[in-house]
Image (cartoon, rainbow, N blue to C red; front, side, top):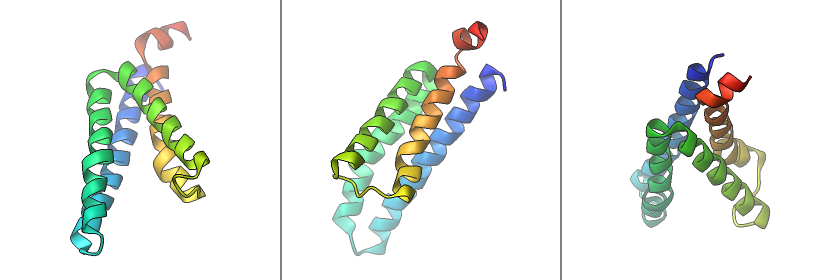
Length: 115
């Protein structure tokens, strides 16, 4: 796959990741059981995720670095016990930003030219 394809794949993974977690937050609010938790989930992490997705779209390399850092931070929270470490949570929360960030960094023009 060429560099442009890697960048577009990284962008797609990022927006799918953001969409899943925003949908989860909206569904939590609409369920009526955990309104305040849902609103907190939308306000804080949702803003960070959308911000990262916008950065990925505008500045793929900077966005790629940001996604890898976000994924590593989320993985660190899991290892510290602040997030319950499960395989599913790892696959849905930690892996997508790391994979997308790596694709964006590998797909940048200077990396493709060096290969």
